Length: 176
Image 1: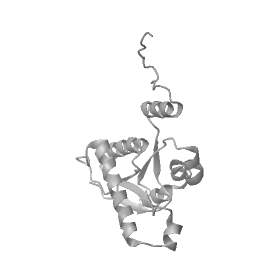
Image 2 (image 1 turned 45 degrees about the vertical axis):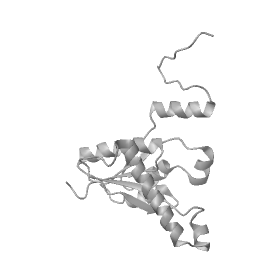
Image 3 (image 1 turned 180 degrees about the horizontal axis):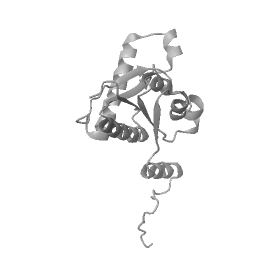
Image 4 (image 1 turned 135 degrees about the vertical axis):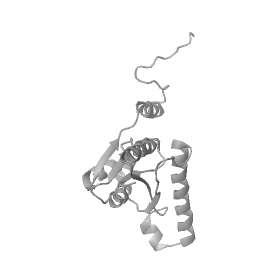
């Protein structure tokens, strides 16, 4: 296995990030590369608030919660860590996930895989788009994985309160 070949992927636990994780595992297998799943985490309330009232015990709890979230993402996506791929999970303490990913994928021959999943308007205003940040700042190739049609249909249904319909899918209707 080529030690310098790495596929870095952002993992948050969202459905979109699980799609990116699947793509990253496939890329790591194809390239015979090390998979580096990155979960960025920060102190609850933000780093500024933590600096004013530090509590190392709480920091340990938050980091462990981040570790469980990363493990859960692999459980949900694959039933555990995938066989046949060398995985080096990484937790990065950073309020800006895009920055954490770009700093990790710092080699020109790295591949950075990110999801382009939909965010709420408020989250996008407050935190910006992780994929846009990575595309603008990365010094390596970035693969932006769009959400699947199923995920988009689920999100539309959740937003509208209407039953879910897939493009090209038939729906059964009952007579009243």
